[in-house]
Length: 107
Image 1 (cartoon, rainbow, N blue to C red):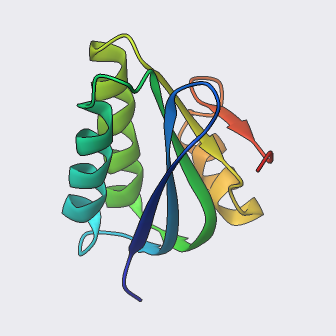
Image 2 (cartoon, rainbow, N blue to C red):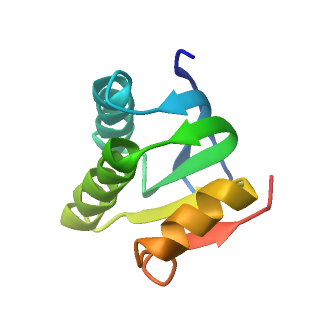
C-alpha cells in the first residue's frame, strides 16, 4: 500500500502530518522529506505524526520516526505521535520508544 501524507497544523504552531498507508522501506524517503520540509519552516515549533491511517510499520518506518524526532530535537522543536493503532503502539513500546515520544489519541 502506498503512503499518503497530508499536512495540517494545530493551534500550538506544530505541523501535523496525517499519514495513511504503509511506513516501510518504499515510503521512508517520502515521510522523511515531508517531515523535514515541515520542520524547516520558521513558523513551526514541533511535529506531530498522526498515525490513525497507518496500516503497517516496519523497522525502516520506526527508523524514519527516530530520524524525524532527532531532526526536531536538533532544532529545539517538539516531536510526538498521535492516534497510533494498538499494533503500532505496541511496536513503539517493544523498541523502547514509548517513553521518549508522547503518544496521544487526541485529534
